[in-house]
Length: 305
Image (tube, rainbow, N blue to C red):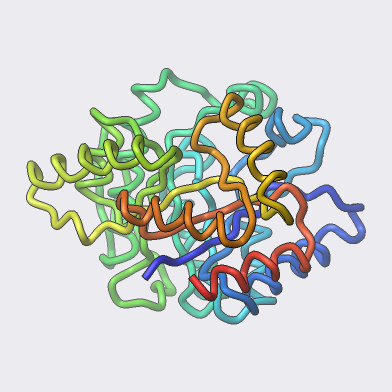
């Protein structure tokens, strides 16, 4: 059965209302058909959403607040940039979120990419290859701190020595780890070795290919391919008419192929069905407008899927 998550990527509310309005959106997801709520791990807003002059909240702080307001949905950063925090701190942040949410945390990790916020805030921004190697070490450190007491790891970039993570995550098996990114040679191999979930972008054809690559990596490292939950992130637009949906799909096909799911309720479900056949198990959607009503409409649709 497919599952569905909501990514909150915009906080365009007055500062005095920002948390309450965001919490209302998360609560609407919690009460409808969504299985999870995610926020981006960025410290500057992204260019398509207004850029650094628009509001952005720190991921783990807002997730802890949403954990206190929700009851059912899982919560995570989609995905946590390895360059922003020492991985030992990431493990502690995720564990704290797990405690606040009573076992609903997911630890998202990625290699990071937004150079503007790195420069603006003084974070090092190594080349892509190094960032991926750092992510690989960070995944191992988080996994160790979720499941071992104490945990020790010595890598090229990060080291922990008898690290204690008390309190422990609520689930005995630790907090699930999601890796975001579709690099076929390295990132998907790291997924095959260590991750519980992977998150990708794309259309059915492109995702089918990525999943085939992931399966080959799993076979090579001796990992059960079906042990990894395969998710896809896209923007959702539910239209009132098929004509409106067709027009928007034509526009978006050139802007970001495979990055949108657009159409009437019936058309959206048909698109989801095609992606399920390609291997997607978990659908994470962001919206152009974040209101409880829009979230409820989407959640109720997914509850029937």
